[in-house]
Image (tube, rainbow, N blue to C red; front, top):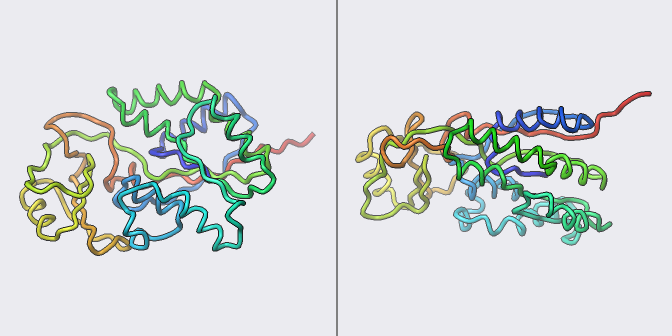
Length: 264
């Protein structure tokens, strides 16, 4: 399982089209799925690697560090041994592929989960909106990383699935909530609280926000979303962000990648 952190559906299509020109040997069986709300990395990516609802990892909902253990535990529950399961993160450059190839070529390894975080890094550093992001993704594809990664996994006999933990959306700052007590998690599109009183007060004090009860979240994990395409940022400041409930943030690709079979 390849998790391209922060990859929106439109950016997934861009990668597929770039590879159709650069490496037409790949075939794509495309689908889609929903991320968990709020579309924080620590919530939605843990859900991916654990196979659990967020309320089932309530104690670690604010961190991604348990992912290797969660991924291993999930596959052990399916009958694999711990030494047959691998996890890697922060993979994004071609010079990392040799080490990754050596790791996955170990005969014992049957399942691997890999976090590719280049897109998320590009998004968080974006200053020219989605147009600028598209240009950087194009350059990244031209580096050969993506097609080499796909080939590496397929050549080692893996079934390859590409997905994301959340997407991203262009938003405009509506101001930051003025709170005497900080929320548990601060995002540009969402704030979370452990106190019902504080969550209610924040909603009342900040226009163009709304609360939503999300099934599957811990009962003491309350969320406040910025409305529309607004963000909890300096008034009028544009940015590409995530955390909220827009289609661009919530809907992600789920793609099976294989070699195109050719008949003589």
